[in-house]
Length: 224
Image (cartoon, helix red, strand yellow):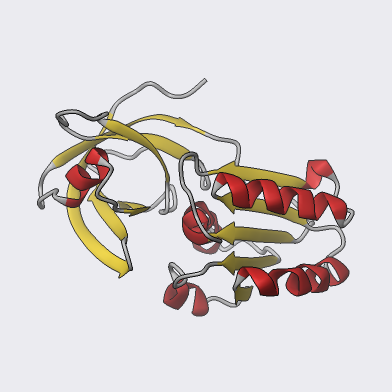
């Protein structure tokens, strides 16, 4: 059952990542309870002819003073156009925190984060949370994209194994990881097509269903 409490956010800044991808940064007047990897409903003030809210994955860790959301900003979305025009100090709200795309508190298994495009968003939340809590974890990040790679410079500063590949290079990488980490838990996030394809690929390679967690970005169409 999602949390229905409404949390206030204060818009702080927007940063351009690449193409039509932007990160929106908010200050938190009060802490918001969520687990790394979850998503929530971000609500803006009235939007003529459009919904006021969208489901977005948290890109920030739960114990941070800022809240990050990274999205494609496209002309056909009144919500994202409104989001793009926020001014410093404008208010937004978060409600309905939910999702099971989370890392177990204790695990001896390696974690493989298999993401397509902006599917890297919840992985940033999880990796930052693990780093900030100084937890030991065997993490491998595989980021598939036909454009640039979101959070690339930030992730390059970390010691975790990382692969940034195009779709055609992926099979070879997954075979390599499967041999090196046969007991790994796989976290798959991205567009519906990407998630379905990766889930089938992993199952066909012998990964158990219980060792695959998925996070589908509904409505997000990607070439990844």
